[in-house]
Length: 160
Image (cartoon, rainbow, N blue to C red; front, side):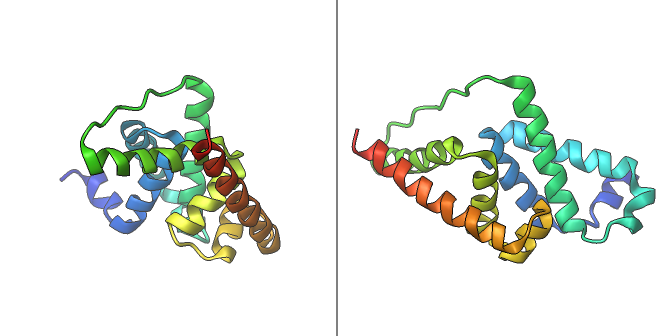
């Protein structure tokens, strides 16, 4: 194990997993999500001398992942093809997962982010507000609107 790997291993595995899942939600591609997380970890390593200045490392890292994903989305501007799965119940489950992912992808970026952090990652509303640099009340409003919009998007798709 290299010195860099040893130093980066101080970050809990659970946080790296959260960073990856968040990046995957934003990017829609597991390989690209891994790359985004690795880029963030590398940038953090290069700035390791300033780690002591970070008040909330988890919020800082999640915001860094978000920024990295936004940069990637802006640079690629292409639509990913979704692979087909054709195995009975697995296909149906995959279809449901894809329906939710597709609906989430149609949400505005801030709604998608808050919904992911709350309902998938399990962050508290106050933590989300801190990570995004907004008020807690504003976070609740965004979450409520995101859930309502997601429900409408899914119902709209099912009624097609």
